[in-house]
Length: 78
Image (cartoon, rainbow, N blue to C red; front, side, top):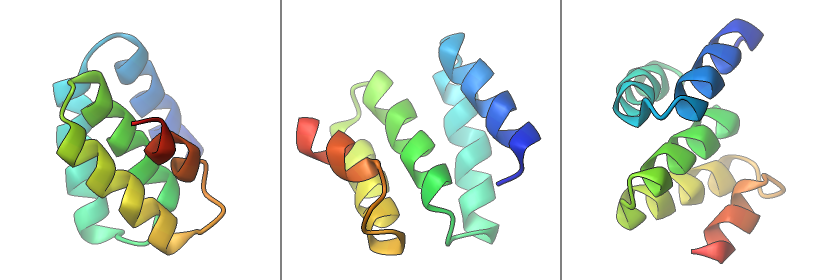
């Protein structure tokens, strides 16, 4: 994930635009499926919407890609 995309996603997420974040990240991971950071951010967006299944699935994928991902801590908090 480029720094610009990450900043854009974080800005949207901080602004409460979770639907836009989910749409953009779902599109991104469909073509770049090995980006654990994208799955972490996607999980955070799902968590903000209280979509626990989406959050857990996203965090799990991030952990599969990178076992030391911060998604592990996020997963454990749900």
